[in-house]
Length: 415
Image 1: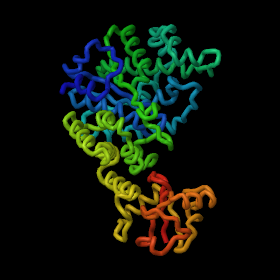
Image 2: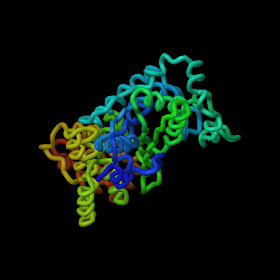
Image 3: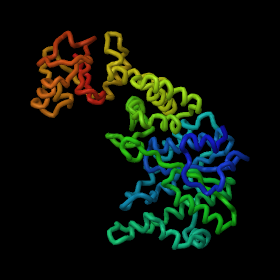
């Protein structure tokens, strides 16, 4: 499968300045992709673009991975209805290092170059930038940006000169990389199209060189219509301290049937034959959620490694009743359970309603009793309407209590 064919098959085709994608099947191209250090971790929305970048690399194209130390000091205003809060230089520095480490992890085993745009902006003089770069950027182009018109409208929040200039700074990145790294292509998500095109236009006006942009569509959750990567608790991060490997695994294992094939193509490196085989097995036995299992395993291993993935899977199996707590349950799994769900100390004969309140599975004893009488409470995956815990409920000094069917509504009770 050629790169142009693979991009089509994986769903990575959106807008591009190329007239024919088959040009990507030819000679190696120097290209770049960038992430601003607005946080100390990428999210899974960034991961989608990263997987597209991996496809370019594996087909022979040469990547420059940019971390936006300079652009991060301003913050991209596109898509924002109000002015961003500035991040301190110290925080930007910490965030940069974290993004660089994630680059190294995601693209391990591949050849790539990492650059920081702060390196070419830190010593630049303001008047020099205005004369040599700003002179080549027409105001009509900048004022025509949708987010600028919105912010400057009667009901808009307004826009500062700093945020207004963001597109000019990013455009200069493309110019610098074209002149110093031979970069002729920027790849990006659909939301970066306007900023990327500004770079193409600046390069053409200033040097006469022809460059290109290739963008991938933003991933949308088919079941909600929302931008992909937002869970009930917020964004799904790649950093294990922000989203644990278990929660990360569970995000993918709960992918809706409607979307799982799309996610397999975008977020894994399974080839077409492998995805077709996975989906055939899924169709033959939908209840097995085989496709979700293969998706969750592949993506979690990519980001967190095999050991963390195996632990995440084992914890999830306990929470979903596929595996029972036993006297032989490894302490490492118990430790992970404590990190994922509420955990309390109790005693035999404790009032069940009180335990539900203490573990936040009920807001009050009144609600707890309604749940118990409504057959909504399980102990070790067995429905119960008991008023108290009994000694026999504890296995190896522990029991798992759940409200309803969702594994997130569980708690660990220990003697």
